[in-house]
Image (tube, rainbow, N blue to C red; front, side, top):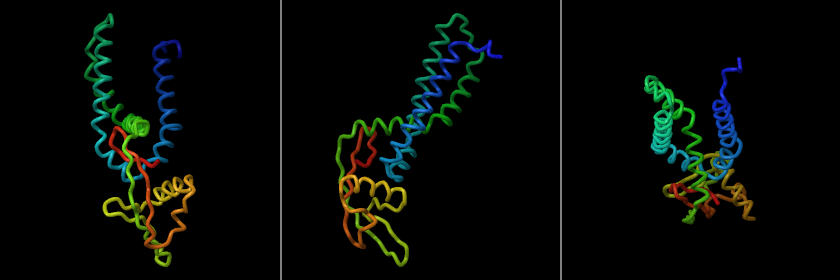
Length: 181
C-alpha cells in the first residue's frame, strides 16, 4: 500500500501539515487577538485578489516544473489547473489572509488613536463603544479592547459609565488594516 508513495509526496504532505499547523495554532490566535471584527471583515471582503495572485504564482511554478521535467506531458494540465484552483481558493484563502495580516502586524507604521464614547444602559442590557464611523458592538471586540486596556494598567471598559470617553490605540501596517497595540 505504501510502496507507491514517493519521497516528494511525503515531503509535500509534511510541508502541508506544517503549514496548516502553523496557521491553526500560531497565526489564527494572534490575528483573532489583535484585529477587531469589522477590520477583519473589511479586509476579507477584498482579499480574494491576494489568493488569486498566489494561485497564479504557484501555477507558473508548476508549469515551469512540467516544462523542465522529462515527460512534458500536458494532457492533464486543465484538470490540474481546475483542481488546484478550487482547492487553493477553498482551502488556502483564510491562511493566506492570516499570513498577510501577520505581515501587517510586523510592518505596523502609522499610529491611530480613536476616541469612543461608552454607551452603557445596564437596565436595558445595552453596552457599546460609540464613535462616528467605527462603533464597537461585538462582545469579543469588547474583550479585546478590555484586554489591551488592562495590560496598560487602565480602567476596564466594563467599569466605565455611560458617556465616559476612552481612547483606543491602533496601528496600521503595510496591508492598510488597523490592529490593536
